Length: 293
Image: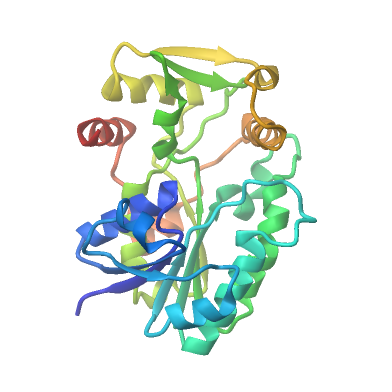
């Protein structure tokens, strides 16, 4: 029987890649999107599009009709917990309520590995977005619906955004190893979690098999993606000189300061036993991205 999944957040940077890769694997994918016309320019024709907004619970109730397995991939870009609406907080709470109305059987969601392992923060820093997303996560856990959380390490998918004018720019002093993941391996794990009772009511760390510092990973990536690209290292203070809007600059500084002191450890053995061991290297992924561009 063909596996099916509904995705909320399928037009985002990571969501679109997961949606395409699940579709390519033969999973029947439905994407709930705010703008069907815009989404069709991003997602293949084989993915069904349904219009709804996470800020509108009634639209979600209609959009989720017939859904059995739901995957949520949303993103918080503000550090202000006093805002009246965050997609990963009120939005997820709305999704959960609509899912219960429709008898959804399984909810999956993505978040950062630091949510599952706060002890990785070597200097005891708290990642502020976790405070914002926590009520949504707790709503899923207390919903009575089977859940699976994918708590992910740093995504290689973001690496091309660091390259400009022949330079891969690193901001901060990143010396600790990171076990980079990617959407190819994540899509495989999501596919393996559909209908898999061993994945129900579990939180899985999602990591690659080899830890590398950011400079080392960047060098490995550019050798396969864009040979000749230089690695440039800048201090955190350089963010203030980038001319970014204040909220974006504050968010970037907090995120990079947090990642700079993150001392990640390999903790994904349970994930590999249930959902399969990742086999996409940094070089493999970089070549695939280069060939696709």
